[in-house]
Image 1 (cartoon, chains in turn cyan, brown):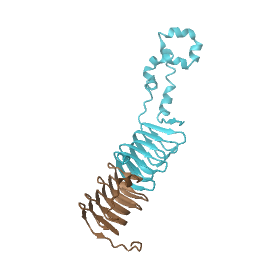
Image 2: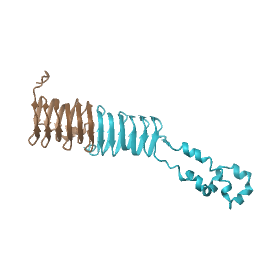
Image 3: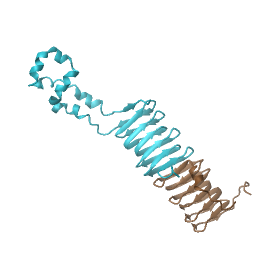
Image 4: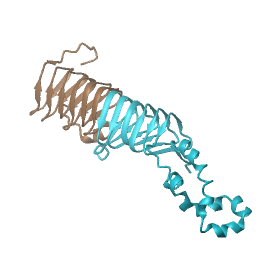
Length: 180
Length: 122
């Protein structure tokens, strides 16, 4: 009784084909094919196989999922998990040992105000940066004193490299967490 | 012997529970007990028992060994062992099974066929 209140369990020998929708947690130990829509958490256990378009709040994959998963919160592929398909979720966790093939879309990724803003506000942020580039200060230590008043000269250079980095790399960000 | 009421304990042992907010449109098949508290449309075929609890709504043809209905079922039921309609259930459809129990208070509309040709029955 305790488990039946808010959790639905699809047992190992069960096959559901068609559409499945609901407002409660769902644990899949068997097979589900078709579409799966929940407002809560989907857990695919190691024996579970889901071949479906999945739309949930949270998704934890320890079994097999083939199909696209859209989550409003997070998707986690555990070390037993295998997935083929695209993930769209603001948080995506892929643990060491998990296998995954597909695309990940974590939405509009703010590339961090620090980098994006470089173009406009770089000048303000610049003073902290020189530590990353020892070459510049070392060469002209005397100038540093003067720069306190006129920093624009140096920052014009650093503003160039961050731009391409931001364009390409950041769109797909995957958090890889190693399980201990 | 007759009229044995299955305690809810037997249900907690079931592996599969379709919760009350779940809606399934399609086919369910399997080899284990299934408890339905939600809504299922389409078709259900099992080799074990199906329990439709009071919140359960089924619009499907059912093919199982045992069926126990406390909720609503619209569709034909074919059970190889037993069909039990509990008080307060509503069933519309034909039932085919060697054993059929209809409790006082149950609402049922449809045909009943207990003439099963299996040589296995007593």
